[in-house]
Length: 385
Image (cartoon, rainbow, N blue to C red; front, top):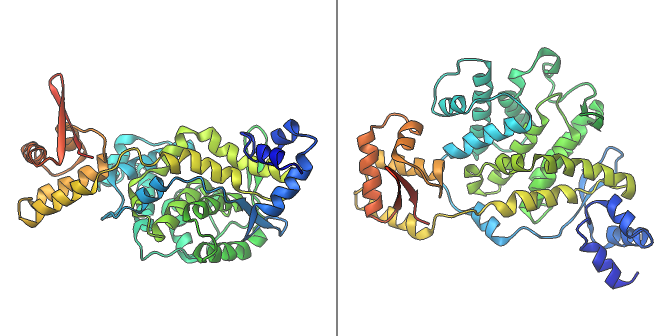
């Protein structure tokens, strides 16, 4: 095949859509596809429903800035604002009822008042579970995470049988048509055991690509009657946290997915549509979706090392009170590099007086850790980047 034509097809904007690529380059398509499969597709030890290996194209499009951003050292559990956004957006993706005020109250530690807030508490517990580095990814812990986050809140017909880690019957994903059938239930124990081994194995060098494959494959198998999407997104985050990407705790991945929800579902569909043409489950469309819509959108503002060092210097001199330490950690996790007001802190942060908040922002602004700007009678603050 002409190398120029091959390169043109490889770089075509419809590269991930084999149906469109075949229509556009009908005379060269079959030869291109055979060469591409032979030269570029890498197989992984995950099986499709017919026993063939899952494959992907390692196009290395994740920018280095995103990787450095996710690897930035952090302390503590899930960031407050990230947890709020993750719960809200993951619920919205699945069209599950939620209320922002209820999410904030549950995250602050208030007891749930109704069934909706019980589900929110379950999601909070799920985020806390995956943020604990001692909770390794095993079949037992995956089951625990599922029960904490989803399993306890399902209707009886959707609950797992006692003693079963996975569903024991067929499951279908439908819209106006049949979108996907999960793996045959009798095969789930073997497939899931192999899947967990893959997650914990040293098999793909790029962790972000591997996380995307994990996300896709979990949804592809669909091991539960309900809650598979929420669990796939949690497992994606859980894997990155286990691999040391600390900033994952402070980034609501689901908020990026929610912004292009149709593209998210289309990526799943495209993998299966391409399978009808290529004969292999190639996860590349899903990896590309995550690269373009999540990973490469992450560093929307970073707090510099100088800011952290300046804070540590004041802390070492005993110039920061215990409450100010809590407020600083809260502002970082809740607002990041976004603007906030003293009234907003008072609303979002429990058990602190307005006078303490006012003293905190003025002191940290004087030190150059915060900056402010006036908007009429209001003042907005933000952490200096």
